[in-house]
Amino acid sequence: MKESQKKIQAIMEDVKQKIALKEGGLEKRLKILEDRISYLEENIHRINKSVMCMEVEHEEKLQILFDANSYVREKIDNQEKKLKEYNMTLDRYSDEFYILNSKVQ
Image (cartoon, rainbow, N blue to C red; front, side, top):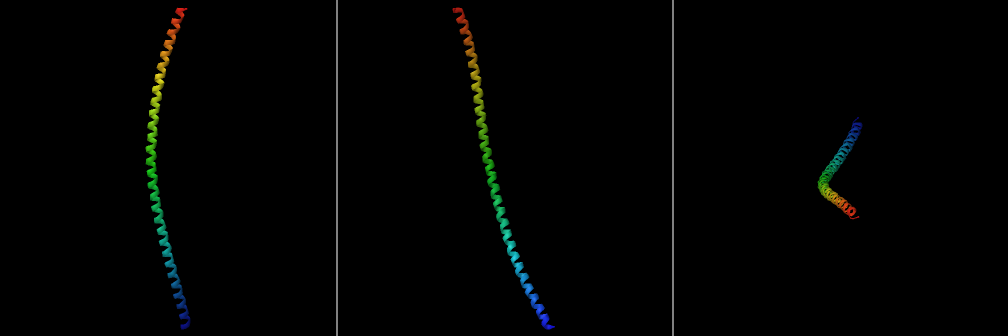
């Protein structure tokens, strides 16, 4: 009986050692996973910062484009107004020329 108890005890010790090794391996794997998660969180934070900077830059550029568009639209409106005035003047001169020309003939 003692011999079988010794064998059982040896098997138990062997199982305990294997469990301890596996637990150590699990702890190492857990540490690796924690490190990877930390690395990913840092990368996500950097990416978020980059995206926010790009959003600010694009917002500024869009504002400049909208301002330029408003300026150009205003200039076009002014040119159209002047052109309308010139056309009215030209029409008036054309009418006067027609009247003068008909009096001459």
